[in-house]
Image (cartoon, rainbow, N blue to C red; front, side, top):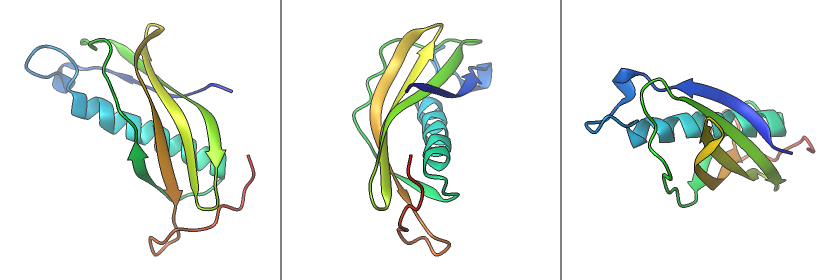
Length: 117
């Protein structure tokens, strides 16, 4: 099931030299949204991003655009979770990619996921 995780607004301080959202900001927001989803689905408070698949920016994001982040198709392993994340502006896809997160303990070591989705 597709689930909206968060939204961000593109402010003037988020713009690059061409008046588009700086890609690094978009990636940081994606990482945050994906971490929120990984924590919610696994029920674990500590996760780290391990891998994001190829990201191709399909459309530019401009000042005052609101970016919505959606996640879906979680696959839970022993210590990790993978799923798809999509960013959209006004219902138009900006990018979509797969990501992989690892659940860790208080010492930063991989931890067995206890919750079933």
